[in-house]
Each structure stands twice: as structure tokens, then as C-alpha cells.
Image (cartoon, rainbow over all chains, first blue to last red; front, side, top):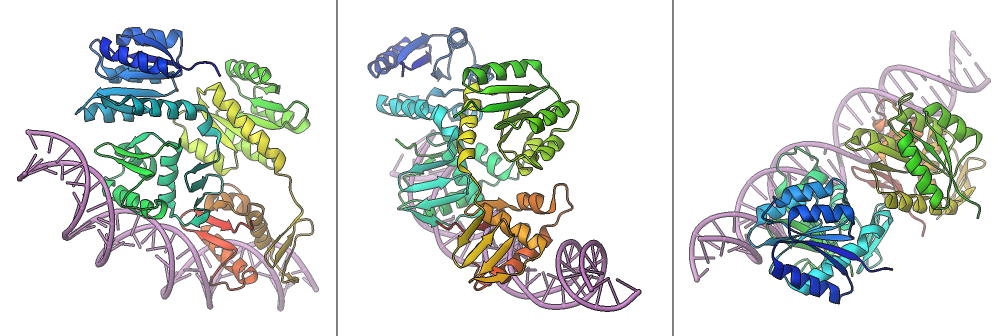
Amino acid sequence: MSRQEILVIDDEAQIRKLLEITLRNNGYKVIEASTANEGLVLAASHPPDLILLDIGLPDENGQSVLKKLREWYQKPIIILSVQNDEENIINALDNDASDYLTKPFRTGELLARIRAFIRNSDVLEEKSNRTIGNLFIDFKTRTVKKNNELIKLTATEYTLLSLLIKNEGRVLTHQYILNQVWGPNQADQSQSLRVFIAQLRKKVENDHNNPELIITESRVGYRFVSST
Amino acid sequence: MSRQEILVIDDEAQIRKLLEITLRNNGYKVIEASTANEGLVLAASHPPDLILLDIGLPDENGQSVLKKLREWYQKPIIILSVQNDEENIINALDNDASDYLTKPFRTGELLARIRAFIRNSDVLEEKSNRTIGNLFIDFKTRTVKKNNELIKLTATEYTLLSLLIKNEGRVLTHQYILNQVWGPNQADQSQSLRVFIAQLRKKVENDHNNPELIITESRVGYRFVSST
DNA sequence: TGAATTTATAAAGATTTTGTAAAGATTATT
DNA sequence: AATAATCTTTACAAAATCTTTATAAATTCA
């Protein structure tokens, strides 16, 4: 396989430098843009395998950049954002960002996410089953096994779990989950969501007090861990 | 293995062209139809290995084309649909479409799905009888035996049971069962379905109060237990 | 740190779905 | 036409699922 290309869109030269070195050392080819406009042009003229997008660009609102990209670009877009910018992060995820990282971030974490997304971006959709650790889900037959034993899930539990797994490694916002599982313009079911997450953890986790599969992203949503 | 043949039924010449080139470059033989009628004729005169069907054809409702095809065509039918046409998509899946793609679609995704389906459809060779526990069904003679004793089933009972067994291990939704057994756009027969399930259990299960073969998946449908 | 917000969980309550018997309607058979 | 067989509908009970309530625990932020 040829080298994967990553487009970095960020106005801070320091961050770009850091990303460039880190990514290059890990075998990726890096293309850099310092403005939204430049980023959009580069992405269009030479579509990369993944985009790292700073949501706080000076020349154009990051959300709008994201939307413009998503009109045609389907591969992973990971948002970079400063801390305490939850509104923006959630907005971005609702606009179909693949994931987010808050600056400053650990490069190890960044690399892990990138690997997960690049690996999954093609393969995942066509598979009719997944194995994650000792958990196995078969979308065709609608069955879930833990340690090879069938687990009984209710309709909603299954819908929720399969949604999480189909988006493994990716944060799903509360709003997104609610829309997908309970349908749109539903009364607020966020308490129900919490109850169902708890139920799922009891059935699916080894120790439901220390969830290793269904991860809470406080104030944002939930994430099914990415299988390495 | 000789080249797989794919029939494309779509009124938009642009899309047909795109599909034709993509598919041909990937080793498939492509047959094209620009109207529902032409598609039906071509499919019948020269059955392809897979059909790509645009659900928004001008001359005839896509659902009706799908139903007509499904009366005799068992291989994969993948639906092409514009976005935000969920009702149509769900309807199509209920009418036994194999999968769907919303336009615009990534060609990579399309190819992946096609590969997955063509791969599977070979394996799905139909057996002419099955034994599950002490139950034996012969599809050729339409007979069912329990502990080697012939069981008398009515036509509907047999249709329902054989549908379940042919899909053993997999959940069949109420809607799917209703479409398959009672035919499409039937008044809601879900109460009848419940009655028939009860009748079948009395005839087929060892203890109809503890069904071990025909399993209820609450709010979803029924599943004939997996024999593996 | 300590208040405020968010998340987790158990248990009660409400709702929906499913199962079953039996009556009524329809279709097929003699 | 009468009878038998099959299918649908009705009515109600039982089971399963989902939502809400109440409260505890954890997390975030000033």
C-alpha cells in the first residue's frame, strides 16, 4: 500500500510543525494549509486520505469549512479544537466530523485515532459482522455473543449497540444517538439513553463499573472503543 | 469463474455511464436498461448475477418493479436512491431488496457491496431438506416430520414454517414475514401472524409454552433457532 | 475545594407487544 | 347446499419492554 496522505488545516505554525513531524515520522505524507480557503483548495485538488481540521480558523468559521468539505468528501475528518469549546465540538460532530481532539493533545492518541480511522474507512461498511475483544456481533442474523455465548438484547438495546459498533472508535453525540435510535423530533429521551447505556454495559462489559467498550465522553456523547 | 453480469436499471444516462465504466473496469459485464419495462424484459430474457435498480424511475414505480422482479429473481438486487428518501428505502428492504445506496455514492462503496453480495450468493446453495433436532422438513415434497411422524400443516402454516427454516438463525421482522407470506400491501395481518405462530408451536415444539425452535424477538419479529 | 452539572443505577409505573381461546367469516370439498 | 377445513377477527390475559422517578456517584468548572 502506498503512503497515506493527511491534510492538516491549521493556522498555528507551531501546531502544523508538530503534526508534520509526528505524522511524517509515522509514515504518513503530510500536506499543510494555514487557512480555510487554502485547505479547501488543496483538499479538492488532491483529496487526502484523512483531514485534520482546526475548528478555530481565523479566516472562516470552522463549521462552515466542515460543511463544505462534507458536501463531497467522505473520508475521515478529525477536528482539532481548544479546550472548553464543547459547543463547537458537538456542533462539528453533529455535522459529521469523524472525531475530535482537544489541544494540547498527546501525539500517541492522535496517531491511534488516525490509524483506526484510516484502517476502518473502507473495510468497515461492507462487513456483516464484527469481533471486538470477546464480543461478537452479527448484523445479518441480529445476534450478539460474549465469550461465545449468545446474549439476549431487546430491540432498543440492539439498535443502540449496533449503532455504536458500526461507528466504532468514533464519538457519537447524544443528539445523534437520540435521533438515530428514538427517531427525530422525539421528546427528550436522554434519561432513557442513560438507562439503556447502563443496561448494555451490564450485558456486554466484563465489569460494568469499569467499562472498556462503551466509553462515556462527558458532555459530548458515547464512543464504542476502537478495536486495534 | 466466468465474468459476472450486472444489470443496471436507471433512467439517468450519466449514472449509467458512470456505473458502466466503474463496473467494467472491475471485471464485470454490464447490461443497461433505461426504463423499468426494458429492465424487466432484459432481466427475464437473460438473468444477471446482480441487479442495480434505481428506485426513482419515471415510467413505473420502483417498488413495483422490485416486487415483479422478486416474484422469480432470487439473486441480489441493490437499490439506488436519492438521499432523504427513507420511506422508499425501508419499503424496498421490506420488499426484499438486498441493500441500498444513496446517490451520490462512492464507487468504492458500491464495489465493496457488490463483492460482498456476489460472494455470498454462490454459497447460498439451497438444500432440499433440513433436519433440526427432532424436526425434519422436506422442501421438495412439502412435508414435515417430528420424531419421524408426519405432521399435517395447512398451506399458510407450511409457508411460514419453511420461510423461518430457510432463514434459520436469523431474525425475520414482522413486516418481512407478512410480505413474504401474506404478500405485499396486505392489510395488517400481524394478529393472524401471531395466531399462526401459536399454531405452529403447538404442532412443532415439544412444549409449546417453552418454545425452543421458534423464538420470539420482541418488537422485532421471530427467529427459527440456529442449528449450529 | 465545593457548588453545579452531568452521568449512573435501581426500582416502580406505564405502555406496548405477544399469546391464546374461541367465535365469526371465508374458502374448498363432497 | 351442506360440511369440513382454513383463515381472520375479537377479546382478554400475560409477558416483555420502555419510561420515569428518585437518588447516588462522578465529573466539570469557577
